[in-house]
Image (cartoon, rainbow, N blue to C red; front, side, top):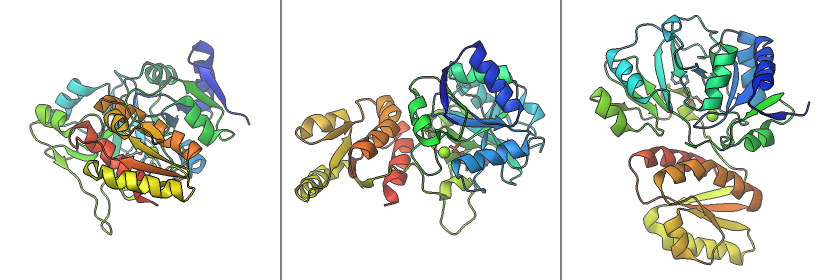
Length: 331
Ligand code: AMP
Ligand code: MG
C-alpha cells in the first residue's frame, strides 16, 4: 500500500470517514504536530495505532474531539478551574486529563482510570473531527521514539505503506506537542510542558503544579518515562553559555571527517558565521515551530547535530528544552 497525501476536501473527508468507521487509522494535521487517529470506541482500531507506530503499550493516547463536542459523555465532572482554562485556551494546544467515565475503549488510556482530551485549533483537524463525528484517539503520527512530524511529508517518510491517508494541513504552526494538564485534583498539574505555558495556566486557574518524573517510580503520565523525539543521527546539547565549547566540538568533529552541523537560534547563527547551521529562527514561536523539522533536516544531512540551547529558559522555552533534552539525551 502506497500512502496518499490528500488535500482536505469533501472526497478526502468521505474516504477518511470510511477508513475510521472500518477500524482503520488516518493521519491528520493539528496546530502542534500531525496525529495518527482511530475511533476511540473501537479497541481493535486503537490497538492497531500502537502496532503501526511501534508504541509501547503502556503509553496512553489523547482523545481528540471537535469544538462543541459534549465531553461530559466521556468524562466525570469537570472542575471549575478546568472550565475556566477551557474557556481561555480551547480550541488550542492544551490537553486536559479528567476522570474517565470508561465509555471509550480501555486501550486508549492503557488501563488508567483517566482520559486525556484535546480540542485542536487547526481548521483541518476540526473539519476531520466534525466530519467523522467520533472521538478520535491519536498519538503523534511518527514511528515511536522518532521525531514528531510537523509536516505531511514527515508522516509520509515514517509511515508510508502502513496507513492509507495523510491529510495535508501544511506546516504545523505550534511545532511541539500539546501541554498535558492533569485536571483530576484540586488544582491543575502540568504533566508535559507545551505552548500553553505554566504562566498562562496560573493566570487563569490561580495556581499550577508541575509534575517531575522520577526514574523507578510509577509515572503519572507514562509517556514521560520514554526517550522521545530522537533523530536518527548523533546529537549533543550545549547550554547557551557554552557556545565556545560547542564550536570547539564542531571543529574537532569536522577535523575528524564527521558530517556535523550546529542547531541554534538565528542570533547565535549570525555570531557563528562559517559553520553548517540548522537555524531555528529568531522568536520563541519560530524556535518551537522549527525544532522538529530542523532535527529531521539534520538527520538527513549530517551524522551529528550539535544543539545550542536557547538563551531564554522560561515560558514556551520550557517545552522546547524538554524536547531538546529528550532528543539529545538518548545518544
Ligand atoms: P503523544 O500523543 O504521542 O504526544 O503522547 C500522548 C501523551 O499524553 C503521552 O505523554 C501520555 O503519557 C499522555 N497521556 C495520554 N493520556 C493520559 C492520561 N490519561 N493520563 C496521563 N497522561 C496521559
Ligand atoms: Mg508522540
